[in-house]
Amino acid sequence: MPTARPPELKQRADLRARIDQARTRRDAEGLRRIRRVVVRRDGAGCEVADGDGGSRWVLDFCGNDYLGLSQQFAVVNALQDTAAREGVGGIASHLVCGHHAAHAALESELAEWLGYERAVLLGSGFAANLAVVQSLLGEDDLCVQDRLNHASLVDAARLAGCRLRRYPHADAEGALRQLKSMPGGAALLATDGVFSMDGDLAPLRKLAIAARLQGALLYVDDAHGVGVHGPQGRGTVAAAGLSSADVPLQMVTLGKALGGHGAAVVGDAAWIDHLVETARPYLYTTALPPAQAAASLAAVRLARREDWRRDKLAGLVARFREGAGRHGLDLMASSTPIQPLLCGSNARALAMALALEQAGFWVAAIRPPTVPEGRARLRITLGALHEPIQVDALVEALARARDRVGDEAAA
Image 1 (cartoon, rainbow, N blue to C red):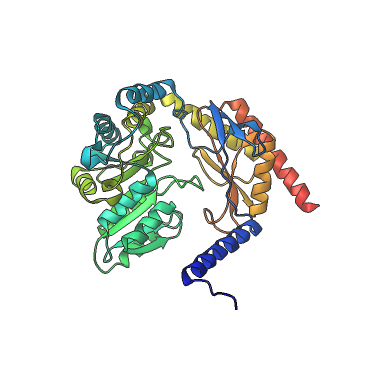
Image 2: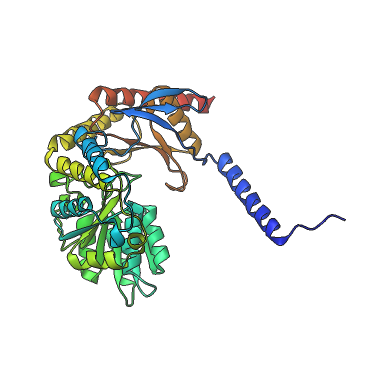
């Protein structure tokens, strides 16, 4: 008689079978994610491995280096010089022995730039959102969020154990209704400043009024706004004419317009001290390398004073949208460097992305669950390292890819 497998082996086999079935389903639905290997970067171009032992050069129109600071020589020099003196690691958590003078200098500069008393550095925007929501809210509290908020905000509320209520995208009246539904406890109204997949802006002034009416704390994740929008690149909060009194806590990432890695939360001293003393993603994480903090400090100083980067970027966005309009490309309404082109089906988005890569342009196909079902798209991003002639060439390639994919679908 066959020998029965031990229960633990059967459980492992069942789990593997479930994983295999899910992967097969993703294949069938055009939802497989494949990591691409970047061999090297040079300006807006990069060499990408093709999977067959070779590589090709493409123009990158899918990254988030909006101001072109990731390769700027002063930023790179700051990282190299500090690494030569201080090493490459953060060594320990901030509250043990990892808090370096470079971290303190960056926190001070960020707070002063954005108009807040204090700042605290964290390892990523995802960790920063977890830190804020989990340290402020518990099971008797309410977190109200835009339906298109970043996944980190949604996950943060779920892990905090609070009540999560989501309102229709950019609907401030819907946010107010959800805030009114809370019988007691604390309330946090959280929103992206720039929505990363649609490229549009949150109605921050209206949300600030809703939060004030209900005594809620307004928290803005401005990952894609700081550096790009507002006076001196201070982000969507400043662009909306709001202050720290209206938005007591704000998150900024260091890895998008600032070209580095990590994130920070800014607020008044009481809020930030509470995060430093209680936020688990801060307490139990090794500090960013001092060299990375020094590089981000150099990037912040450039972003503050070099308005030409934002001016050039705004001109490229306008040029791209004008050219796309001439060709009848179905762009979503966005005035930001994030320019989504709706494709509908996953297959169509993938086919267009492949056609673009063959023409020398790297544009990401974004599919569910990152975006809603039936709303797959190409997420085109522009940066200050791009040139007008490259933007014009991309528009022409997009029109050809649309026509080619449409012809193939019809056949």
